[in-house]
Amino acid sequence: PISLFLVPTPIGNLKDITLRALEVLKSVDAILAEDTRTTGMLLKHLEISRPLQSYHIFNEHKAVEKLVGRMKKGEVFALVSDAGTPAISDPGFLLVREVLAAGLEVQCLPGPTAFVPALVNSGLPNDRFVFEGFLPHKKGRKTRIDALIEETRTIIFYESPHRLIKTLEQLAEAFGPDRQACVSRELTKLHEENVRGQLSELIEYYQTNPLKGEIVLVVAGKPEKLETREEKQAAKKEKWNTSE
Ligand code: SAM
Image (cartoon, rainbow, N blue to C red; front, side, top):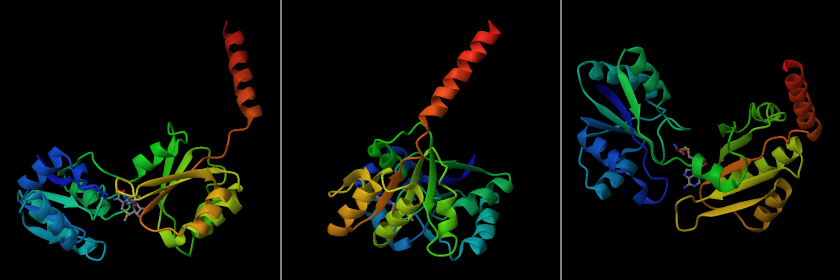
């Protein structure tokens, strides 16, 4: 039996709630919410009435032990965040870890999350990618960016609109101004917009078009050098020749 369901909720468009999310939310003993007001409004819209309990980063450590105790006695919970998939740049990881450590089972439902549509909309390679979440605001920010200089996979960041230009500038400095990127704004909402271009072009664009709303920044990885690709091919040929 499942003790904890992680239930994704819409990141804008309310139609993105899944049938299974509705079923699970209706079935649990209580719903744990990052913000009981936000979730309360959503539940009202969905005509679901279950006990709501707050679960956020400020009470996470303290709450986990109590909740696991209740789960051991047979109570079943759903965790939701303000938007998207719980535990993805949102509270939830600690609870999942401790529920599993107690020998109980968790299940995350598939559903809305911002980084997947942003990655696919970007048009950048998506066969391999890294999710960086939010960059640290101050301490450790440059170290984190510098650690990505040699990264060849597509890189995904969550960013707040007022910090975007600064981030684009820092990335342009580290990766070069001609690196391709895409800014996805207001995904699933009325004013959804995906702006694609070089980092330098995006900087210019957002200097003249002030940014509002929520955003995901997707940046191409470091291009693999032509020589290395040729070298790889040559190496492959060599291997074939010698194994014949
Ligand atoms: N748990 C969420 C998820 O699964 O995507 C992420 C929560 S995180 C606190 C919020 C960040 O997600 C925002 O700052 C933004 O980077 C991104 N985000 C959420 N909704 C978005 C939307 N509709 N359009 C673009 N980005 C969004």
